[in-house]
Length: 226
Length: 251
Image (cartoon, each protein chain N blue to C red):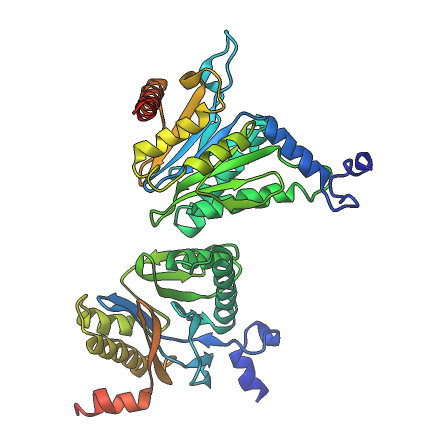
């Protein structure tokens, strides 16, 4: 057992278990808001820690943050972000904008640049400026865009998303596209899997659309074709 | 009793006063008058210009200052203190734009200035700022705002207000004359500000400095010619009013 555990940790036993988000997360904007979809597998090297990890943090009823990279870093810093957003709301009597929230996060992370943080996050929401989607990572990168995917399975997800995405998708089409993209990423990427958690950010807030097991999605998408 | 409690400014007096703050408010009352009016699509700031010495260049000392493109303030009290406050507010406006990617709301920058002033009523070795400020502007969503701060660090929103030497007289005039129809158009709001200042300023239009912000437009400081024109209009209206009253009495 101890030899097995040693393979999972860095620094020769000083850090016991490195939990990582081998992950696929994605988000895209379309005419009815923002769709956010993530997998839920959490790995430590080649060991699966859990298949049911929550990789979307619900900052407030209008804001969501996704997580990929180091589990500890993501969970901690996004909770700190949520704290700042709450304080902003109390002080200014209005909800924080998506651009401000993402800027707060990226400024926090920029202070720790070079110190080994690992966070790839998408901040999604709907504020007074309309639907907002920002990608923030540990280098201090902060990008606004219409479509992002992060994590070890992001390339698979981009392939599916790019071939199916249009601005004028209907809501059911958008749900199907997002779910399909994550599913295909989990199929090929060893570090992604578990369930697909999907959210839809509308003008009056986000709703959780579905949480479906990847095995069942296999039946739906690939198996039936054969 | 009072003499012992105004040395170290962090100390309360036995009857609950902060004397240094009250003395600062006295300093404000010595400053030249400033008036602010919140219209529907315009906000107006007017100040009483102190007469300058012969050799002094006129426009070096401005009592109305822009804090950002959509916010400006006028103050009454110690000019040097005001300069510091204005500088800090200007930096904060830009800092806010950087971190939040939105221009400040008038309430936010007022709160910042008020917090700054309050900090100086509660630190060692510092005295409060000897200024009251009138802060006007438009928020991102187009709402006009007018706020007033005082040396104690409190702030309130107003429809129209005056600070400085004859603030009381001006405020009473405004309470009588500020109605929805009095500020119906931009021009009316400007005229109301001039009328209010004329009550207390000696020698008319020459000693008035006026600035306006219209929605989505930057601060505009009116030239003396424009002020003279408006003053002349007001005089004419006054005469017409007086004529009407005379005729009424006669019939």
